[in-house]
Image 1 (cartoon, rainbow, N blue to C red):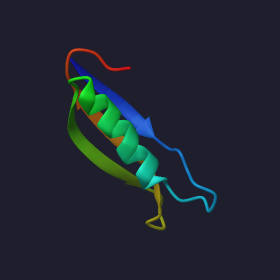
Image 2: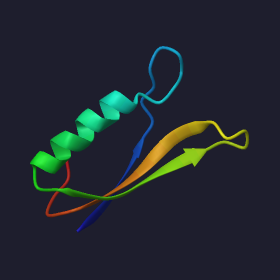
Image 3: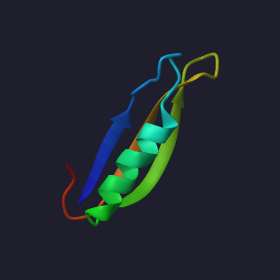
Image 4: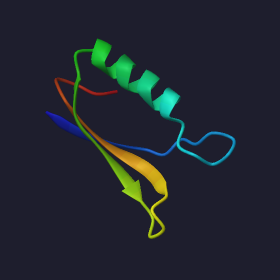
Length: 61
């Protein structure tokens, strides 16, 4: 089964919190879920606003 997740959590300065995203991805991988792709989503000025993450596995939380 495939699951799509949009990660938008930001740090104090308004930037995407990459460290927190990596921690969440590692937690999902422990559950046997595989990350199929991670795609950045940018605004018209090229600023990264979110990441679209596609998971593949038995179940996603």
